[in-house]
Image (cartoon, rainbow, N blue to C red; front, side):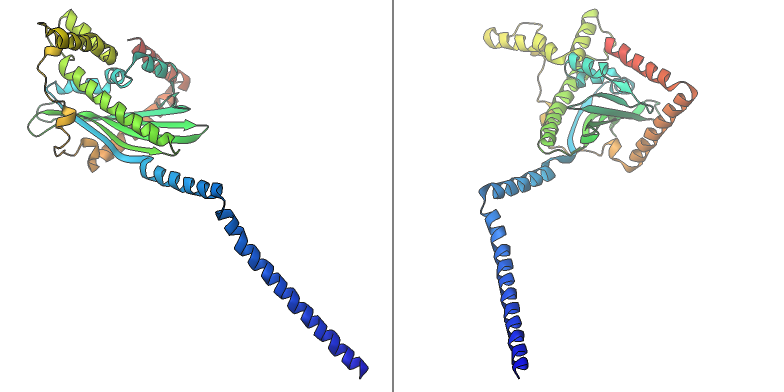
Length: 336
């Protein structure tokens, strides 16, 4: 009897202890689960950090990349082959670099890879530049019907891509026979918040300057058949350093005209019309050559053909010799 009572008492005691342990564990778990998050979210620095991260991620997602991020066009009365030569040569790049020193820095630090691509100083890091030229001649006239230069800029830092951009330059002949030059941003993909937004804004502003200076140079100073020595000097100055050219020939004359009136022969007295940058904003724009599916395939084939041609040269000749030839061409262009 005594043994049975003792066993019952021990069993009851063990059950009570187990219940108390479960109750204590449950209360402790619920307390930790309820107080830990609350204590974190009551911390203003924690909330500010989470909120800033979400805002930055949303801002970068919305503004860090863009397709068709600019599209500028102007009409030109110049010869089609002259325009193709301009857009395919070094003349456009002089205007694109804005100041001569920028072109010198980029060309001096440029090296060539086995496919003809260029590696030069980036912003920051290293920038890879690849370009391909595509055109088509009119079967009836034999003149160039359209010309497109597709240029890709890829900026990397320690092997990581900061931003990747493709732009197109060229012209097309419209149905009425007129020629329309265009500068178009195909896409800009940024991977680093803030830097992507800054670079995208810079390239948009830069594109506006480049297309304006290109129109001013092409339609007013380039390709003159009966040019004098003075005309040739003006053409070279406007191409090599457009900001200085404007300062020398327009800014001062406009200032003196405002104070004392125009003098005969002032360049700034030329007939002034609203800028094409303002006139072209509301017009319905035709599809550009590189935006057409057939020509996109053509451009892809041209890119592959250029790579195969460089590989063939490298296999036939020493790759280092091929790179030296390309570097020499770049040096000659820089000296020009």
